[in-house]
Length: 221
Image (spheres, rainbow, N blue to C red):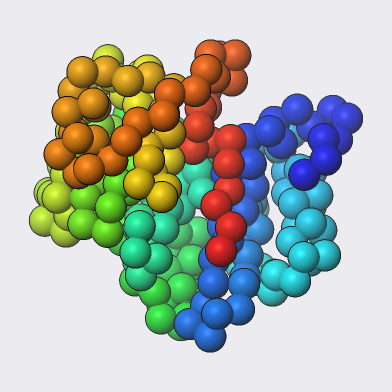
């Protein structure tokens, strides 16, 4: 993506859209509707890129009170068979419900997760899929019922609030590696148990704005 004047938050590429491949291996994208009006113009630039590159654009019918912030709150599980969907701060429950219906029609289960700690305003700040079976989470970010659901559905590795505030859950697991801005001793042990090698990257300037590795990328099919 080329930068655009006045749209400095475009660098946080995750929140602008949700991209994937349908069951017939056709790429699609669901553009976001951002809570902050200053960020909405950036969505159009991302949509144009997707259109030029052969993605089917799928628009949700959201009203003025409904918001959906892409892969900030919508995360593919590592097997690409289901989607973890956060709501409560940026994305709204009604928007996530509508998204879940759409994904259900495409054959994908959406697991809805309620976020309750305002410091973790996106799901990708407190949950990271590690393998098809395992997640890295900060438990305090979730409603109690949601936390019980996560623990029931996946093998969970849990970090402290201090670690989560250092963005250890805002990493990306890909090709046997976990790209992270910080490597705590606990995270190193967790990754070792799953046979994942850490890669540490310096992103402190971006973290001042509230995002790190997972917030700065969109994994494309």
